[in-house]
Amino acid sequence: MKSIYETFIQIQINDIYDMIKEIIRVQIIKNELKNTKNKEIDEKMLYEILKIKTENELGIFPADRSYFKIIYEKTKSFDPLDLSIELIKESKEFFLTPKPIIEIIKQDLADKKTILITEGEKQLYLLKELKMVKSNKKLTITTENKIFQKLFEIFFSEKENIKIRKESIYEKLKSNEKYDYIFSTPHFGMKIKNNTSSNFSSEGLALDNLKNKISKNGNLYIILPIVINFSNKYKELRKEIEDRFSLKEISVLGNKTFNNITGIKTYLLNISNEKNNDIILNEYQLEEDELKKIKSLKLNNEKFYYFNDWKIEYFLKDETTELKEYNESSLKKEKLDNVAEVFRGKSILKKDIIKGNVHILNIADIENNEIDYSNLNTTDEEERKIKKYELDENDVVVSCRGTTIKTAIFKKQNYPVIASANLIVIRPKKQILGQYLKIFLESPIGKTLIKTFQRGTVLMNINVNDIKELEIPLLSKKEQKEIIDKYIKNKDEYKKIISEAEEKWNKTKKDLYSKFI
Image (cartoon, rainbow, N blue to C red; front, side, top):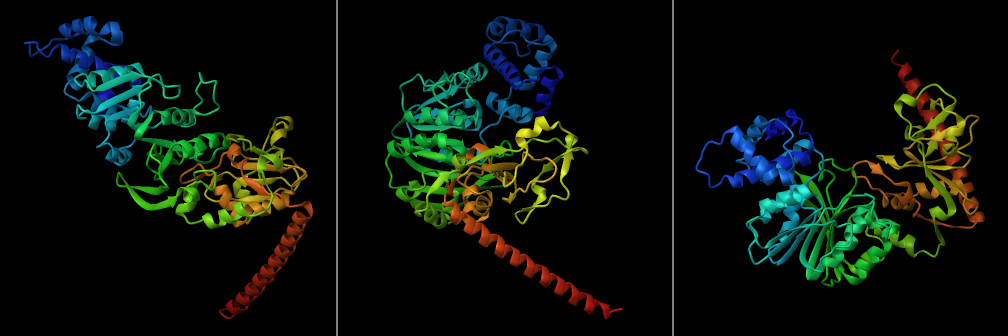
C-alpha cells in the first residue's frame, strides 16, 4: 500500500482527494473492461478508455499515460475502500473514526431497519462492514465531498437499499426521513461560514440538526468534544435534549482513542427518543487497539441533570458531594465574567525571549501559589504593544495549560510584567478582592470547579471563555477581608514555624555530621 502512495507522490499527485479520484477512475475502467476478451490491455488502449469514459466526470489525468498504466496495474486488484483507508492513513490529511469506536457503536445495529451514517469519508471502517447489510435494511450515507460521493456510488452500486446523498449536517437537512440508527463524528470547533442563524460551532450545529432525525425508537450515536458538556452557549440545546429526548448514555473516551489527532477530550453520546429514568455513564481506556470499559455507573436522571451540565467525570470520580453542597449552599454566587475582567496572556515565541525591558510571567515562576519574581524571562517589546497584557496589582493568575492547576496573586513591580499565554489573568472589579478570589480558586472546591472546564486529555487545557462561566461565592467585602486577614496571618505563622524547624533540623544535621570528621 505504501508503494501506491509513493507512486502518487512521485507523479506529483499529492492531495488525498486527487489520489482517491484516480482510484475511482481505475474502478470505472475496470468495470468497463469486465467483459473484454483481451487479457492484456496495452497502455494506449487503456488511455483511450480513460479519455472516453472518465474525463467528462473526473477531468484529465494529470500525468503521462504510462503512469496511469502503472497506477492501474498497482491498484486494480484492491478493494477501493481498503485502498482509500490506507491512503488516508498515509497522507494524514484528515482522520477516520477509529476502529475501537466502531466496535462499540456497531453492536446496536442488528435490530435497526433505517440507518444514517453522516460524513461517510470519516466512517470508512464502518462502511466496509455495512456493504453486507441485508436488503431489508435501508442505509443512507451523506457526504459533502463530490469525490467521496462518487466513490460510495461505485462501491455500493449493486445495493439498491443503500442511498448516497450529498448533504451537509451543519445545515438544515433536506429530507424529512427519520432513522432508527444515526452515527456521526462531526468536525470539532469549526465555524460554519454560511450559518447565520446560530452561534453554534460545527459540533453544536450537527447535534441540533441530527437530534430531529431520530425515529420513535431510534438512537443517535455522536462523538462530541467536551465543550458540549458545559459551555453556556449549548445550555438550551442540552435542556431541549433532556426534555424532548432521552440522554441514554455518555461515555468519556480514552486519551489515545483518536491517536493524537486531537488533544481535546471526546465523548460518545447515545441519544434516544425513548424516555428513560436513568442514564449510564461510562469511562473507556484504549488498550492494544481496543476500548475497554474501566468504569460504569447508572444514575437517576434527576440527580444527573441537577448540575445543569453534562460533566460526567465528577460522578465517575465520586466528587459530586462537594459540588452538590456548594451548589445548594445559600451563598450568593456570581459568574466570574460579571465580577472580573478575564483575559489570556500573550503568546511569546522562544526566539522572542531576549534581554529586554518587559518581564514575562510563566507557569514555572509560580510555586506553592506564590510568584517568584527573581528569574522572570524578558523580551524587548514596545510597551504600547504589550499594554493590554500588562499585569496590575492584585491581578489573579491561573494556569490554563500543564499538568497541575496553579494560582497566584500579582504584586506590582518596578518594571512591566506580562502574563504568558499559559496563564489566564483575572482582574477583579469592585465587588471582589483579588486575594479573596485567589484563596477561593486554590481551595478544593475552587480547583474542582476549574477542572470541570478542562478540555484537554493528558495535559490541562482551559479555554478563557469557558472559565468566565465559573461561579464565585460573592461574600460581602467585610467577610472577604476577614478571610484574607486570617489566611495571611496563619500562612505567615506557618512559614515561620517551617523556617524555624528547617533551621533547627539543619543545625542538628551539621552537628551530627561533624562527628565524622
